[in-house]
Length: 317
Image (cartoon, rainbow, N blue to C red):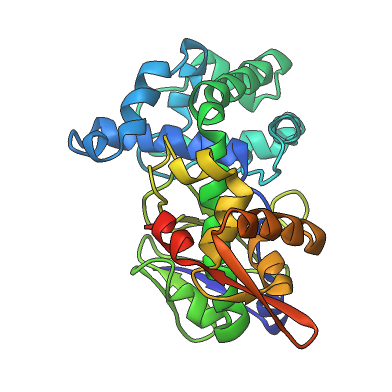
């Protein structure tokens, strides 16, 4: 059993990522590709896997030695920044001691010796690091970037559905919805897996829905300095799947996320909070949806309350 232990401070610091993490999504997409290679039926149910396999760049092949179909995977690339260049710079700045320790642990249960470039990377060689950065960037551009609008829509739609659970029912109500193998027990979050236990140390937990990942939630442990404690879970799929979100293509990802959030009526303030945008932006997008006869708005005291019209419900399916 893998377990995260929470203090009172940790519970107060549970929060959702504000934007998807492009570098993390690229790595998870590659791991999904590796998993699909050993499970022939998997690609049939997720068309983007076939497309990604064809688009996989030769320059990203070094990553195959770091990101196999099963963990452990190195954590020095666990960056949740919403900008891919910022995330790649984060990888570049990994301390040499961290590279050496993580890559040594990665090879403990593997036969033979790692390739020369990996040995050089562990030694902090600048050329080896640039080879890694180029591989990550090219993987992102080939597999993730063409699907980014869909990633944004799925991410914001998932957060919009789950954030009210955290606000109304607390952490336990939220965790119960993430995966059947995840459970809250004795002031800690547990997941089936290898036996390991971690203390969050008051830093809280970052919740990161992933559009490409389809497995059980992943625990990413932080060091309190560079790396954050995070829980990565599979975002609920939206219409069209990862490769083609037809609603986002029609409305734009923000308006699609707002429309999905309005499966239950909300005030403008609640709508902005659910989707993670400003109040003025929520008002502007709500007006556009109202003008298109997808939502209706009623005044309740000092607040405006929005709900779906029959056309809006039909569009959501």
